[in-house]
Image 1: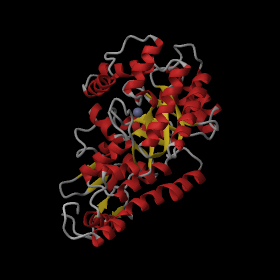
Image 2 (image 1 turned 180 degrees about the horizontal axis):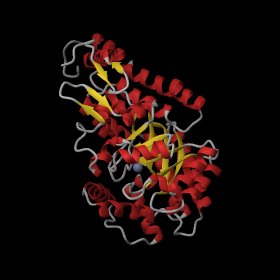
Image 3 (image 1 turned 90 degrees about the vertical axis):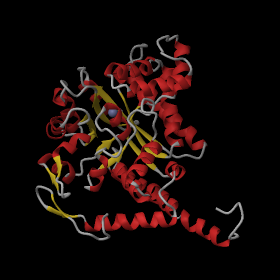
Amino acid sequence: MAERGALSTLWTGHCYVSFGDIYARRVYSAEMTSELSNLPTAEQIRRAPKVLLHDHLDGGLRPATVVELASEIGYTGLPETDPDRLGTWFREAADSGSLERYLETFTHTCAVMQTREGLFRVAAECAEDLAADGVVYAEVRYAPEQHLEGGLDLEEVVQIVNEGFREGERRARERGHRIRVGALLTAMRHAARALEIAELANRHRDLGVVGFDIAGAEAGFPPTRHLDAFEYLKRENNHFTIHAGEAFGLPSIWQALQWCGADRLGHGVRIIDDIEVADDGTVTLGRLASYVRDKRIPLELCPTSNLQTGAASSYAEHPIGLLRRLQFRCTVNTDNRLMSDTSMTREFEHLVKTFRYTLDDLQWFTVNGMKSAFLPFDERLAMINDVIKPGYAELRSEWLFRQSVATTAPSSGSDAE
Ligand SMILES: [Zn+2]
């Protein structure tokens, strides 16, 4: 067990880092919460302001919406037409370990996102669902080139999704939730439209699109295939993230950063392969891991999704525990809420249960997310100071009022807690 204030000095390859004060703060905060209010409850986590940087529009549909849209457009390919059973099917297909079954899930969701009505509804519900889950800022990504089968063109797809997000934000406001949603336009790694999609993102940059991404199979499709797109975006002073270091390891991360110039890493979880932990707890960072930490490169970590794709075998063994301790710029994300049957609240719940994270830890992940967002600096700062920190402060202060109720209530009686 760690002693309070115990100093451990770690060799990081370039410098010695003292973790004494980090441990001291964490021990102190764990004592505060366990003494007074225990770990955050699911309800507190849901109400906590959250930031989401890695969420796929075609991976977050409500099962009932898939069923209804399929029926409206006459799509008969669904494996189930009962929403509950369909939801289970998505989760099981993603859990199966079979790439074909996993990819099949997106065939169905994309099939119902080919019309104006379908795309608009899915985008609006996405913003509504995230807001109801306590997300205050989200960057939701999708590949416009995958929504052209019903006759829409790339421009129309982007406009419709943006309109859907605005509608979802409006509906959320009516229910007392505040959320801002920005779009990231994704190009597929195996296709050859990256420059075209990057130009599309740039044309819509002040109209709801905040950045660019590439996704798809890592092995065999290195990000350097799309250098023209990244170089174009850099010349335009625009932002992009790259799916890298999810299944494929360090070379993919290295290329994304040092050849392509990514601002963030989509997943990036395999950076753990460049970190050695000796039996005595000494941690050694390789050159790439040091670079990622030193430059504060954001990692868009998606714990549940990583368990499904085999990047980690359990929450306890997920690298997020070590990466958080080493103070990498970790953010927590959902990836595909439908396939992983998850939400930001559930991701945080898993981490609280596994690592006994406190509200301080959850605030740290959330502030990291906001610092790493593709929003102007002044807006990020205002979100952190005026929305996120006050939200967590309010949750942290709840024990004060619980205690005052407890001291004035009768000391016995069946209703007393
Ligand atoms: Zn992803």
